[in-house]
Each structure stands twice: as C-alpha cells, then as structure tokens.
Length: 194
Image 1 (tube, rainbow, N blue to C red):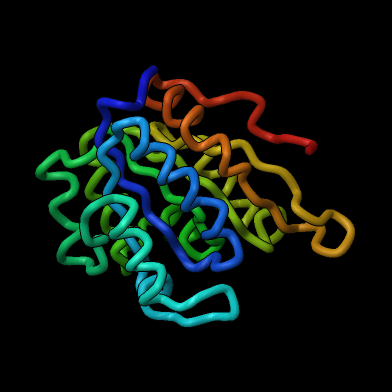
Image 2: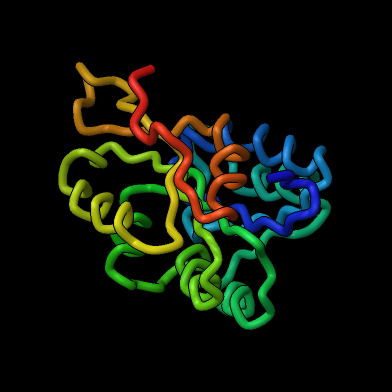
C-alpha cells in the first residue's frame, strides 16, 4: 500500500544509539508525501547523551515533519479520540517501553499515544532496539507478537557474541512494515539473520 496519503505517528524512545537510523526513514516518508507527526518519550525529549543533545533532536524532528513533536502525556491523549493516525510507529522502541506496552502501563507520551491509538483498532508498528529483547524482555516480546494490531519491523541480533540477548529492528524496513500492517499483515520474515 502507498504510504503517501497516510497520517503516521512516529514515536521515538530512549534507545539513543538507534535514533540516527530512524531519522532518515522519517524523512523518506515525508518526502513521499506522508503526514508524519513525531512523538517523544520524556527521556528522548530531555536527555543529552554521547549520541546527541535533546534540543538538537527536537529541532531535527520539527524540520523533518514541519511541526513540533508531541512531548507530553496530555498532548498525546487526543491521538485516539481524534483518530490522528492511520498507523503509529514506535521506533526505536526500548525494552522498557516494550515491557510497559505489554503490561498496559501508560506513563510516557509514547505509551499514552499507543494506548489512545489502540482504541481505534489501527496498527501499531514496533521497531525494537533492546539489549534484553531475548532476555528478561523476551516474555513481553512474545506477548506483543501475539497481540492484535501490533506488528514488528523485522529484527535481528545486533551483536550475538558480545550482546547475545540484544535485538535491533532493521529500520530501513519501517515503510514496508507499515504498508503490510495497514492491511492487517506482518511483514515476513520477522526474524532476520543479517
């Protein structure tokens, strides 16, 4: 399905080392005519790290999308009632956000956007980036893999020898995953070996 006429929410959480892989995908969606709204977790919108400064990220997102990101729980709440998005993408999605989503905890703008969006039975696409995706968070991954209207950007282990429980989505597959998800299908294969 063509994404050019879609409204997509793209939520970023605190996997700071992966954000630079998501921004080009967001820009590509906008270039194709997709209306993209950025949503930031509190950590992503406030923390300066060795991977970048929060105010620079906010500036980049505003430049890419042409609008200010959603950065509060109150501003994320209308996502569902106003039916703002055809699809909501969470990328990168940390293990922390994954666990909270799997257990119905709504304490960040990203999780509120997800909860609000889910009421409309529209797809949520998760681009996981977690050092414990195959560890303690494997149970949450399994729970969400089996949850209606939740789809995953195909992922692989990012460093099996040094970090055997770490998994990261192939962010270049966000658009293809969204195209399948809006038609009720999971992009396959979901587990990659590359």
